[in-house]
Image 1 (tube, rainbow, N blue to C red):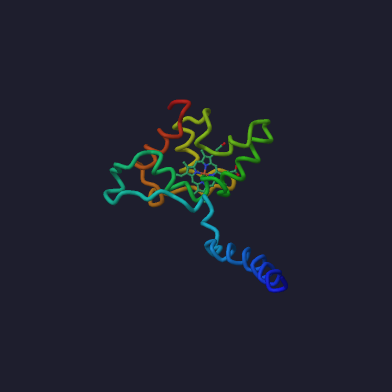
Image 2: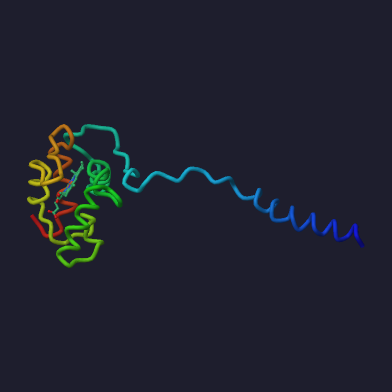
Length: 137
Ligand code: HEC
């Protein structure tokens, strides 16, 4: 009887320990979402074949994907205007025109530095502005 209680107590101790070691070891957390930018296909950047969404993710994503500093600042701005926090994502906006997007990108706006033609070519910006400019030209 004593042996049985000993065995049971050992089992009840090692049981959870064994179960715990069966789990994969906790790894480092994945990268933040704003670092998960899409890759661009190789080729001539001045006559790009990539689509607007991929270009936006790659060229603007460091600041304008979820958790990026552009998204964070714009979320605050849109909430101050009484809109939902989701409007901090440029991809959710319905009020942007192509011309507005291009102007902000080339001249910058407040905390956003202007993007040169080396950062984003005219051909790439055309596609990005078409993708974001849901309010037309
Ligand atoms: C280095 C970070 C950074 C990059 C790269 C960047 N932006 Fe921005 N963007 C910002 C920030 C920050 C703001 C908010 C500026 C403010 O209001 O202070 C902003 C604002 C904007 C706005 C204005 C939105 C409004 O409500 O007026 C547009 C449009 C915009 N960005 C488009 C783009 C596009 C398109 C790209 C890529 C070609 C891009 N941005 C790249 C940081 C960035």
